[in-house]
Image (cartoon, helix red, strand yellow):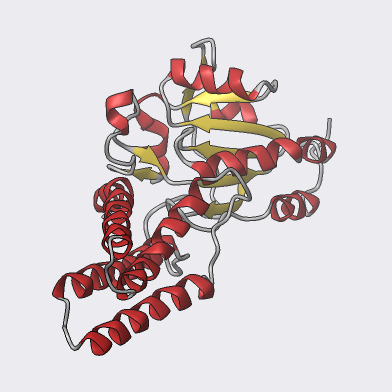
Length: 285
């Protein structure tokens, strides 16, 4: 399923863009206004993808009523146009049907899903010993987190706009995390060199750990096989990635909070992490 999503996200927007361009060209060259209906059916998909790619809040719109209304209005306009012409115009209906089916697939992919029963860490469990590397390539272990609360953010990579937006939100909240005695650790699913470039680009003294070959992600059940959008492998991004995850552990290493989001779904507000930290008793020093 993850690989199918990766192919869909990479290829379908380009298909829709070409389809809309063709429909607009048919209308511009003296065609009927029904081709504008075809564009309206397909435009919501482009709007949805553009909204996910922009740098903004780390959460996608969950209701999407304007986009759905636009698509159905376009279908109605296409129907009215074919009735006015007395011609079924199969190509117009093929384009419109593709837009409606594509929108349904997008909504399935982007909407939050409840009842995810895939394996993964659960509150109340103790975080197992996990091996990572810091930005200098030195080995580090999750055991080093004990002694104070820790917020662990598993970062998919710079290609995931929602993950990057969530990272920036946590960076802005870092002083509040530190006032609660928490340690913020960013765990990268990217190779060491690529992670170092990302850290330098962000320009903040953040604590980065690298998960070589995603061994620790597999141990925790957070792997997303084939989850990287198709084509990014050509630019050095691994084919597999990690499920977008936030873990909060207490001073004893017990997991107190888990949030695992889908590839393009809603991320929690940072205030949720602060509330969890507020419930913890500071470890004696």
